[in-house]
Image 1 (cartoon, rainbow, N blue to C red):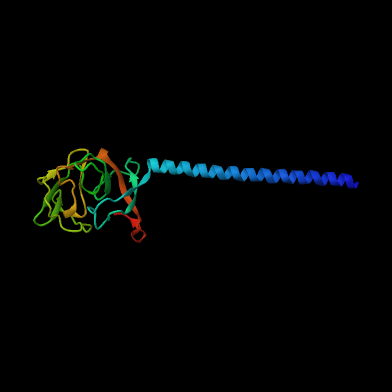
Image 2: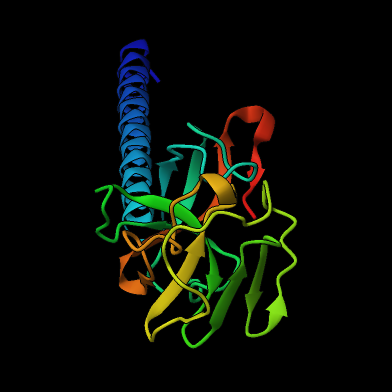
Length: 199
């Protein structure tokens, strides 16, 4: 084989190698772009239909939640089961304060809720509730006379900081229509020292 022929073959091989490198580089860029777009779409889907974040405003849920803590909340779309007693929920039902509230579900539809304000006891369907999450006994009367029966499609809510919470004891809030429950609190991500599940 002549030297000229060898040079031509070598040049052709070099061009092919360069084309291959360029092709592989474009493939890598395309795959990376696909990955980024896919991640963005997944995040948009999750934050639209599965979860979002919420800030705690005020002290009505102490000691479970404190002012300015940041939460991950599951959007209330019945995908992960219905709202039940004990859940901490984010509610946007219109009220006298014109603001969303975060409270704990104490009674579901059909439940009879009774509060003995002198003893600070909460009873549901004749059963004294063991509430190790409360800050103080429930001694604060806010205007609603007890016992009450929770209407269909509603829940009865209380703050864990019982004597510093406006909730279903207060006529300006009252029973919560479940259609106004936006989400259920599931996880605290700030502050880091209190990172963990909300219960």
